[in-house]
Image (tube, rainbow, N blue to C red; front, side):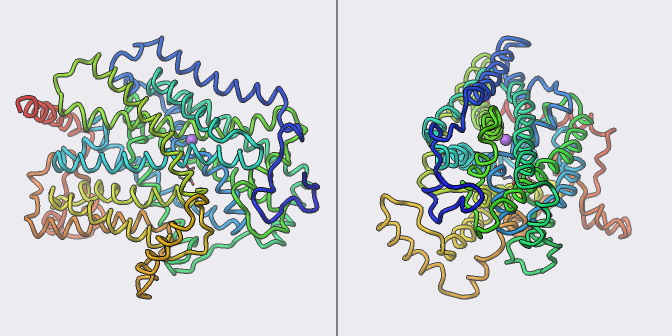
Length: 599
Ligand SMILES: CC(C)(CO)[C@@H](O)C(=O)NCCC(=O)O
Ligand code: NA
């Protein structure tokens, strides 16, 4: 064991291990608290399996009967993408690089206003059940399927990272059994998601978000006390240069600046809060459109609070261990255990906080994946399927994705330890092109189906070229694979030689990962528009009403009316036409399903 205060950190990660039985970090109360979290989540699942409509329709299982109020929806919205990755990763980031990352909070303003006033009205008024249904209404079936597959890909990798990260960090510090933890998380989550459907997912999210905040708050309060009070913490982080001013450096390769975080972050937020099925499904499960918009607004303060808590935790941690330059993610867990041991119940609360964060994210992933697989891939093929069958199948799907999640955790394990950057890179590399696809459809009436398809494909290829290139050219990282190290080195050197030759490309690869969403979104829009104009742009009259948002018309509001009409879509999207749109959408959807039923 290490001595406190003097040198808690050795150079090697393995030696930060604490033996739980040796130091008595966990008492009975801690285990009880953790068990209560799991039991309560299971209980909520069971409650919704046995009450209400008893999850006998897909409307209830996947859409929560479209009856949710704005408070549970808003807490559930922040829980979806706030996982243990953020709880561990953000303090580590603040510790190592200072508070610059905090400026991502600026991106929350536009990143939530735009979804609330552009994306939610479009999706809500079309009465879709999956965001990808929009792509079929606007473009074609092929675009819908490609969009769906891309989303599935994104969420499947992401949930592997989510379930693996807390288990790995805990294992490294407290000796918690790694695969036991992964299995427990995956199975508990699969069970309540499969039993209770979206209602259970949303209500467990509410409960878990509260636990998440409580755990972080406990660490901060105890941490500040043990490090000598607020003034002392402030003095140390100030002297340690951890309070960053606004960095206005326009260089796009600079990792974190106001521009990459505050502007690039808006695109990241749009891809998560605007078009990601997990979130769109929550908006659609709201009672009314107004409630959906209100819940989006309510995300703002909660998300700021979540960000503030994790940033402050990083600062307190710095005040405690300022003599060490870098911070491993596992160090955050070490810090927490160092602070909380000897205070029965609190270590358990923090473990519950970590798992709340993880559970609420993967449950959203399971349910949204089941939804898109059902609504976008299966139902259109078998439109005559009975409701009972469809519901059973949805449950089987939710469960299968749960098991797939365990497999993905294993894959993440092979890729080495992954934290904040990995998660945000996934959002940018796969979520960015999806965002581009929706923007292309909503804001550009000329875009056609071929343009959308080619745009998405090119966007994904460029995204992966950029993403993989950046990993391979920055080869200072230690190799994560122990087992087949030789083979890995050989392959890595070969690929990095291929990737790192021209110096212009090197600059391209070093683009800040915070720009990935914006860059990839733009690629899809540009390629989509070019291909659309080459293959014959769609006329505004031919676009299904209600699928367009007159963004260009609003941006160029100063132009004369006839020019605006010629240049861009000016179709109004008022509440008055919404019922008409509803009807057309429904008719068209029925028509499409009937066409496929005949085939
Ligand atoms: C999605 C953001 C950027 C919003 O602040 C944040 O929640 C975050 O950094 N998430 C990291 C991914 C995760 O926690 O799984
Ligand atoms: Na979460």
